[in-house]
Image 1: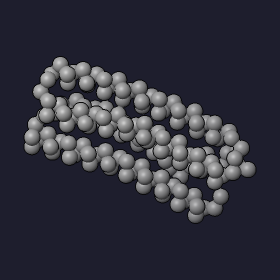
Image 2 (image 1 turned 180 degrees about the vertical axis):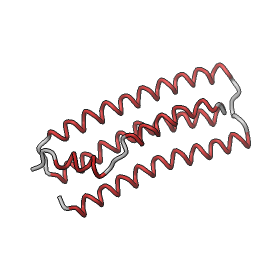
Image 3 (image 1 turned 120 degrees about the vertical axis):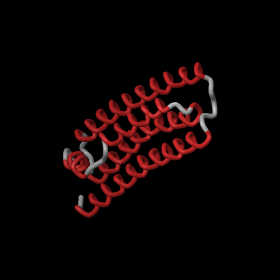
Length: 151
């Protein structure tokens, strides 16, 4: 695999990941502004508590699933005997799946924040974004996957 293609692939994955993270943060900023200007849409405290526990459980479940599947798929990709281009493509798919699994509870939590106005709903957002940053696609990770077991 040529150095130029690898750089382009890394740049594309970095732009995609930054876009997903920035999208979450912008949505959070808009939600905070709307909450500041209008207040919460729902005032039911019992419903808010129920939704908070659901969101928290949903967040932990999806982030754990995202981490486990990412680690397992990357490990199997490293052992696979495939052309480097195909490994890069698989790495991209694994990264996008991981980011989507982390983004889903963050978006759900932001919607609940808009409904209830409780800043505790931002905790799952931070958890999801933190996991996305931890598994941020880098050139080193891509080279490690593409160089091992390539044809």
